[in-house]
Image (cartoon, rainbow, N blue to C red; front, side, top):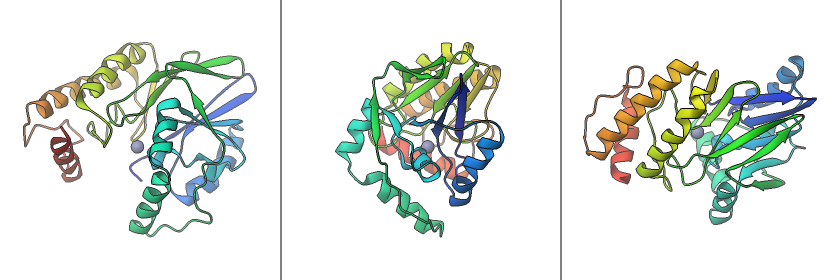
Length: 241
Ligand SMILES: [Zn+2]
């Protein structure tokens, strides 16, 4: 659903799973697929507290989930919201699950900050604007940037409740040097990009935010993202800003 991505990273005998797929068959297959490639996650990390990024425990029920402290605060402010959103989407798409979502042991992480994976370090960078929480994960040793719900080739910038246009702009400015330093940029939704493609999308997103700020009702949307669904997202953005 929504081309949702999960990313596994490993170093020095440890592995981390960032975000999650959505469908039960994907979640069920994930441990085996990862093990076949030599990845056995020791921990889970979510880029933000939207339900579609929190499902890792359905694949790895024994693992703790790490979230940025702003995401922890959001979970406390909106108890049960992720579970309700998941249930609503499951009903809409006729998805049945063997078990409901239990977030279990959730660990709050300072952002900006870092977490260790084996012998290496994952940098956690603030990424607000899409929502009021959010972080981007930079794995500098292997050149991977997990951008959360930014820099997507399939979705225009979405200002959700709690997000803001000004913060979205700051996040794009913060992501630019990280993109420059990365080889692979993995957005929360849609295909991973090389550096040049990610920089092009970043520029398109800045242009889109300019049009949104001007209140344009029918802005030119970027190539590949000009669809009825993206126009619907634009209407939601207009209502929110
Ligand atoms: Zn998402």
